[in-house]
Image (cartoon, rainbow, N blue to C red; front, side):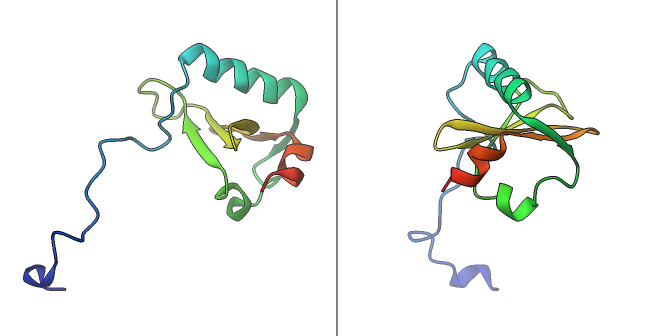
Length: 99
């Protein structure tokens, strides 16, 4: 692609938002993770299809942790938590009923 052919008026502008950015406070993030871990089922690495998880909003652990927790939300409701080097904990009913 030649850059002189790009219409800058219709190109998508870059966003300053980071991946997984939400309005959750750190306390809210950890409360939701604890909820999933208390009410969900640990299923390791292979318990959740990555294509299924792509339907949900992924929220990275607040802070600059290189291998932190990832919380998955469906319409604002927690459905899964990913722990690096451990795997997934999911609320199976929430995954089944999520859009």
